[in-house]
Length: 121
Image (tube, rainbow, N blue to C red; front, side):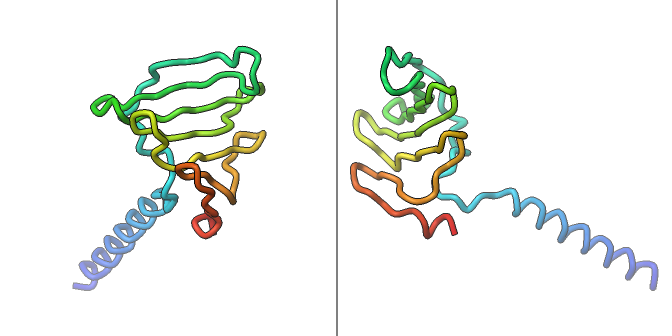
């Protein structure tokens, strides 16, 4: 009986640990790019002497009206991501600093500035 109780407690600890390790990998970021697996790179446009090195266009495999654009700086680090539905913005413009890290603070949603600081705290 005592051995059974110890085994049961150990099993509960292992179950709790595995649940905790799985839940810690889930992001609370509402604009994470984790759900872009259904998108495929459809176009790459070089900067042509402009401000950015290149732009990549990704289109949804099933719903071709959905797309997102990645813009890269001349250090070939990601500078911004913008989501589209047809030809209109559909979601935030996510900007990145010169090291390719997401910038906290101001994001742009459908041409309106949205302060995203509460989501980053």
